[in-house]
Image 1 (cartoon, rainbow, N blue to C red):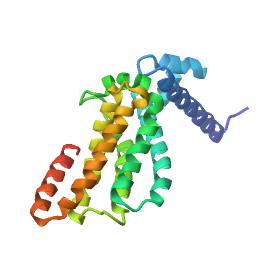
Image 2 (image 1 turned 180 degrees about the vertical axis):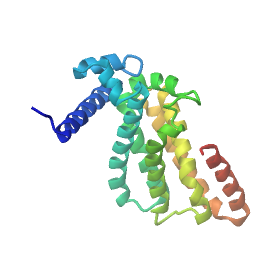
Image 3 (image 1 turned 45 degrees about the vertical axis):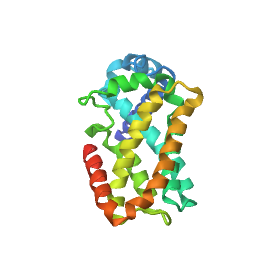
Amino acid sequence: MFISDGSASSKSERTRARLREIALTSFRDRGYDATTMRLIAQEAGVSVGNAYYHFATKNDLVQELYLEVQRGHRAAAVPALVDADDLVDRIAIVYRTGLDQLTAYHEHAAEFLSAAVSPRSEINPLAEASGEARAITEGLFAEAVHGARSGTAPKDLAEALPTVLFLAHLLLALFWVYDRSEGQQRTRRLLDRGLALLRTTLPLARLPIVRGVVRELLELIAEAGR
């Protein structure tokens, strides 16, 4: 009895989805170090070779984790942005929903940081392989900035702002990794202070004497993230 190409493809897709689901759960519960391709294959009931057929390395599955987290981030942030008009309020929504999505991974976050910190790492958030997940996050900041209807930034400053906000998001996440306060409240307080400072200084950026300097600074920071 012959198996159609469609049936084989469907089975392959189910296997891939199962491997992905097991890996993402294991990353959350066991961390990066304890999650191995052998363990994933064993829990999925497939050979290690089959697991490698679908995902060439464990880091490919980390990229799937990045996408899962950022898609959840987008799903949480976009509805909240609908009712927010003020620029800083909209930026705050993106940051806070982003932290919310990370919460479940805090116990093992340092392991992911250790694996990602090298510029040559495939799971470095600025690596080419991380581009799709990065685009989701930076896109959220772009929506927050360009969708604001009050407290807006001048157009020339607004162009560089999403990339700068994304880089600040990475720095905030780094602080969060090391934050051992209950519920990572130190990270939340740091964010609140940063947002308050942004709200205070943003009007100054509209002054002609300051605007050019601010634009140069934002463009310089944005260049570091490219």
